Length: 355
Image: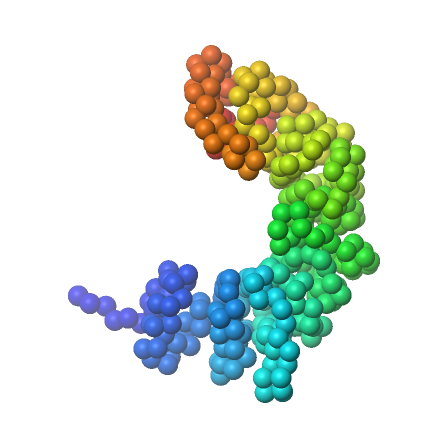
């Protein structure tokens, strides 16, 4: 027996096809009422990596009679490869930045905004945007136009500062200092220099720390960054640290540096990136477990492989597998970790679950 495709069933189907936008668009052309039902799913979350798709989306937001901008909650636009503003030729021929700006002004329910390469678009004025963001991704440098966006969004709880390339331009701290800037920030992804500026006085609980080529590449600067995490208004619960390529500090000795702060008493989750070549020494794992003895709240510990280590030693994983199997026959790996950190629920080393 064939059941009738009711609007409710069609919406359910559309939900399963949410990432297949071309198919959804074809389905929506069947009947006008079906199209209106699918609009929220079509526009809820969008990701654009090139200019053509971005412009089609922005034009639809501006000109569609159903005002689909109200349905947009998540938006990612990569502006990296088309960051040279096109001069406005006439009132009827707006430039690309103007089109983006107009469309953003028509997304009142936008909560997550990622503008990778935003700094290339100085002409975008965010002063009239009606949305209240929870999540924001931007690329340095932070210009005066980006600062307008930041100062108008006290609702942001997650901030990601992503350079156009590793070790690229850093932030202008002057735009991030002042009353009312990120008062509710809980999750921060940034370089060591930006963390020192943003952490003190804010309720940050989750930190992703990346190396900054514009910062002093020494142990003292890392210690200063870690010390700034002691100055948050709430204890930091998770830290993911990638110091791949740092001349003085790596993932392994970062654990010891953390002991100079209050973080061991609050961290529930710790993830470091480290060179697997060091871990091939069986005695090294014992040293790591002893280093974690002061982390009284730690439940999840993970070590990820550094990019540099994979490039220099592409066969290291096979070597580690052999060593890991041999160690498993010699000692109780689970007990080794739990003796040092009895609260541990999970330990993962280079994609291998130990606990």
